[in-house]
Each structure stands twice: as structure tokens, then as C-alpha cells.
Image (cartoon, rainbow, N blue to C red):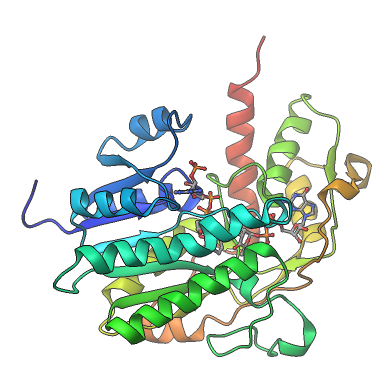
Length: 334
Ligand code: NAP
Ligand code: F7E
């Protein structure tokens, strides 16, 4: 164990952001501990192979004693709480589990920190979300949602995340902890889970190009999202924990596009100008309540943290399609 290296504990290490963050912290010479859940997590092997420098600790956000043990083993300077049930559609089908993991899990890890960090030195990052705003017209500022906008979550996921946001703020105010929320708008990329719409589209586009699939089934195509690249966003998370003061920040691109616009660009990457013959709508992918439009205003993070997204919307779509063309081609079984 090095006495000089900074130490980070990351929940959600097997997820999209966990992978990007592990790479970033490694470049910054951190000693990294990642929480992995389950008796036989199928992602363990891939994580060990890709991130041999991460020490995995078995724990679960629902099991506070396991989190205390993780804190004692890792002795972190910084904790990044990325673990959650993060799929909005799934949260409608499993609302109580979502409340337990995505909501109460935040309390469990904050308590684990409070009980083990006698000097009150640990810095805590909570993965809050634009889903807390809800995307309705009445509370949407013209320049986009900012840190002072009113919340109106539209899913069990959004509601659970709002609890995580407030309990983080409450621990900051009650115990003087350096505990902050990053309110992040959608961020995607080559590590995005295939259950999210962007990756579902880019995988399908690659498979259609390779002759492995004929069409894709999707839900509503009109909702708009402020889509950025996940690699840019983990840099913002890290900057929040290096700041002089604990504050919450919005990370976003300041632009919003519909799923139809994502389809336009993704299919153009494989030379198809009209995607309509390749897309079928299936109500199974529609939600009981939809978030119409998300647009974020990242001015505060840009001004105070010097953070700015680098990858724009066309660049994001391009990198995802290019990646999936390679991934899917490798999977062709001759
Ligand atoms: P993700 O790919 O879905 O990863 C979620 C992670 O949470 C996985 O590593 C998962 O582990 C872990 N997890 C689930 N249940 C757990 C439990 N009971 N105990 C411990 N870990 C558990 O999500 P992401 O896109 O990387 O997002 C990271 C965080 O940011 C999430 O909290 C998400 O809600 C939030 N967020 C994401 C976005 C976005 O656009 N990506 C935007 C705003 C906020 P398994 O692999 O074992 O399932
Ligand atoms: O849906 C529509 C769907 O599941 C985007 C999470 O990271 O970002 C993410 O949540 C839009 C929605 O992401 C399909 O109804 C249509 O309008 O990719 P998504 P999300 O719900 O925006 C926020 C910021 C988070 O915090 C979350 O953790 O696409 N949509 N057809 C579809 N969505 C999916 N998944 N699958 C479809 O077939």
C-alpha cells in the first residue's frame, strides 16, 4: 500500500461511468478500489482483465456492513457513488428495488463513510441526474436546467435519485462532510449498456450494415435529450472533488436532440439516408410517464471548474457507430 498515492473507492465500477473513471483515476496515479456485487458477477472477469490495477471489493449498496468493510479496506480519500439501478424503464417494473439501491443505497454509503471517517476527510461524489428535473415545460428555463431549477421527477428512478440528492446535501449540511452531487445529463459512448437507446441504435445499425439484423424495435422517438460523451463527464466528476468548496454542479452540453435525430446521423454513418424502413415501434419500450425534453445549462461548471465537454453530438454518434462496427464484426460466427 502506497502512503503517497491518493486512494479512491468507486461503486458501480462494472458500469459505463465506472470504466471511464477507473481509466481517468489510473492516469492520475490513484490507488483504485471498486465495489463489485453478487456471488458470481459475470462482469468480474472482464473488469479484472481490463483494469488489473483496480482492487475489487465484494459489497452491495443494500448491505451497510459490507460498505463499512469496504471503507475499512480501501481507506479512501475520495468515494464516487456511481452504483445504482440506472435504467428508467426498468425502474417502473422494479420500483421498490430501485428505491432500495438507487435511493437508500446513498444513505448506506454516506453512513459507512460517517462511521469510519473519524477525521471527516473523505470527499464524496453522488451520481445525481437530470431525470430529477422531469423535462416538463413549466419548470424548464430557456437556457436549460441549472443547479437552482425546480425538481419534478417522472419515474421511480428519478424519485429515488432525488432522495440521494437530498440526503447528500443533508450530510454536507449536518456533518460538514465534503459531499457533492453532480447533476449529469445523458452521457453515452462505447461503454454504454445495450439497454439504453443510443447503444441499442448503434449496435443495430452496425448489425444491419453487416447483414446480421434486419430492423430495430424502439419506443417513442420524439423525446429529446442533452447527449454528451461519458469520457468528458468523468473528468467533471473528478474536478468536483478537487474543488475548494463542496458544491453541486450540472454537467451537460447545452444542446438537445431527439431520438429521430440520433437515428438520422447513425444510419447516415452506414450510408442509409432514410432509416424509416429499418425502425419499428413497439409499445413495450414506451414508459408510463415520459420525460419530453432535457436540456442542461453547464455554465456554473464551466466557470468554476473549468470543465467543458469536448465531444459534440455528431462526434458522439460517429464514435459509437464506428466502435460497434468493429465489435459486431468480431462477433460474426462463420
Ligand atoms: P450503469 O452502466 O447502469 O452502471 C450501474 C452500476 O451500478 C453497475 O456497476 C452495477 O453493477 C451497479 N449496481 C447496481 N446495483 C448495485 C448494488 N445493489 N450495489 C452495488 N452496485 C450496484 O450506469 P452508468 O451509466 O455508468 O451511470 C453511473 C451512475 O450515474 C448511475 O448512478 C446512474 O444512475 C447515474 N447517471 C447516469 C447518467 C448517464 O447518462 N449515464 C446520467 C446521470 C446519472 P452490476 O454490473 O453488478 O449490475
Ligand atoms: O432513454 C426513449 C426513452 O433509456 C432515452 C440513464 O442513464 O439518462 C439515462 O436515462 C429516451 C427515453 O435513457 C427506446 O423512452 C425509445 O425517452 O436511453 P434511455 P434515459 O431514460 O434518458 C439519464 C440522465 C439517467 O440518469 C439514466 O440513468 O429514449 N426510447 N425507445 C428508448 N429507450 C430505451 N432504453 N430503449 C428503447 O427501445
